[in-house]
Image 1: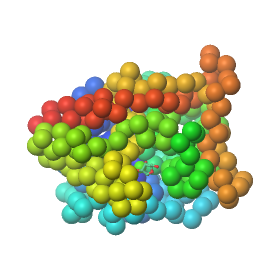
Image 2: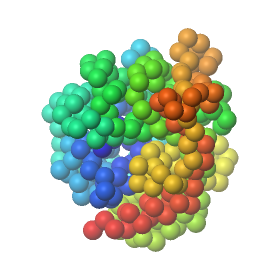
Image 3: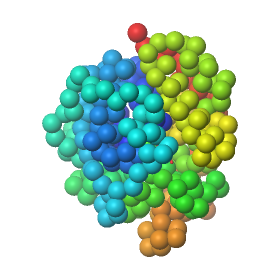
Image 4: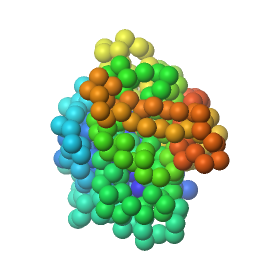
Length: 307
Ligand code: RIB
Ligand code: CA
């Protein structure tokens, strides 16, 4: 699989879960500007790679800004450096030469059809650019597993849009219209996966570097959620993509057609999730239920196995 992300405290937990799971071969990590600028998301992906002891996995920097819009940021939810309170030291291993788009096209087109999944945990700019460069990706990619969008939950950056889609709605619109097979974890699902005190404590009890790092990420989100949103447990968004690849039974999905609003400033980035489709021909699946405890148990179990 390839992981496209904007670390980001929850991206970091998703990366750790993937790195800790031997059934997933992480071919590359690609980064995009999003929660924090590209320079920081790329450095942060390298930091998390080092925490997991996986410096052999290449990190390719991607788009610094959306296709058309000004760069957005969500630093208030991830801390100024993007990894909460974690000290942002310069990691040992550098980013790889070449771009995210080139790496995605090369790796997917060079592999058996449908053998490479792509997890997208940030704005969809890199995938949109890769599809423009090589439209055949849509048929060759394995599932494109996305954290993004909102239906019944409403938005988290505006009343009607979730951050990843809102940040680059044109990219998202192109990707959803591309023909890729997509499994989408919007706020409807991720809001069912919350970092309660008990779940954070269970991660801390695992006691090794990766688990303590994941716990620190979730605890940072807990504090921000209390301060900004007034809730006691923050949703853990991005790891739902990797958790589904590992244990699909943790989620319930429904076939649909997803389209993205780009013409209206008021509803920019809104995901229209239409369930009135023929299930046999639907290219999109929307997660309607998630087992929050199961996701956290999976993370604790896998991170605890990292030696
Ligand atoms: O809305 C949640 C998404 O926005 C997550 O991917 C989080 O990392 C932020 O990028
Ligand atoms: Ca993210």
